[in-house]
Image (cartoon, rainbow, N blue to C red):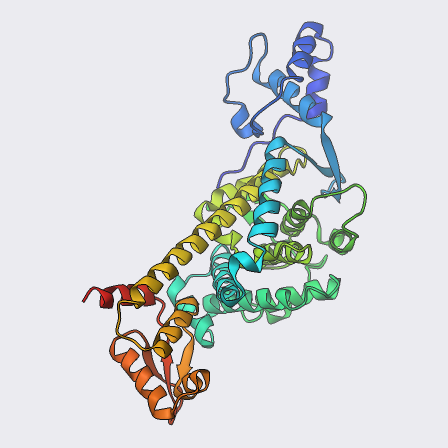
Length: 445
């Protein structure tokens, strides 16, 4: 990833053109023209400017327009310049989509279904754990990582440990939403995420100190593309962050809860307080903030999976903010796009699963199975990897042990359940992930 050239500064451009009345008149005229796209200078400089202006003069008109709607955030860079943002039409539209889908539609048990919610949540937590870790260098296949988490296997190496830690941290967040965000809570979150993955175990759960060399962000050629604030600023910066995260949601000035969560994400990454794991902490804190504000559907989506498809865009969004006078609008646009894509994918997944379940129900009717077996397969279709036993089947249907045993063995013979050995004496029958395909294949015989 290349280092982004800083955008021309607003005050410098004002000084340059203030005495040229004709050019300034044209600049002010263009500053009233609404802009559809919120481009950074990195791309803006290659556009053809309007007549009578060069690119920098046109950029000044753009900055005047943006500054008219600029809102300040309670955070500064290392030099004391505040971060800000513009509430664009695109941001408002995406927040409306998220409020509608992530809170009203997907957040409702009527949509996800209480019997499927655990499956969706587990799937999402595993996906987020894998991709968030892969964004920071974890190297292992998705299948191996997923099997490790689902089966409770201990991690074999540092890469698997990163993913296991991420999953454990995400679960910790889910079960500690009622807790106040404090410095100690944040340190514990980092400890959960980094345990067993750092060269020095003493770096877990602590911020960098003044006597240490700060961790820089470099490109593939070793050239530094980002310098975090000095370590001596970290205690004060984190205290501001914690105060911001903990303040009343009805505070003034109002900031939409999703934008608040994105700010927390950005500022942890910007402050870079830890030796390693800053990105994972930032994304985990984003989830925590969104879930605390009632966006329950965020437990079912993975933002890191979308980010992983275009990691350079994620990195550029950070640099755009840093190189254009701390304008966080760029990062808001990127993250809102990521969230909306994640929600769309979840909607598509739910609809696909619904159609699969309907198809399974129709095809089950063609099979010569008894009502107990049909009920079990309907349940299995909603609960992949669920393990049934002879005793559980017997208790569910009030039948004899021999009848329950015959039901399950018959389904295993049809390859609709997988026999597994629970212990030396107990036999289990697991619901396969591809149950729908197996039923379709059997129904066509």
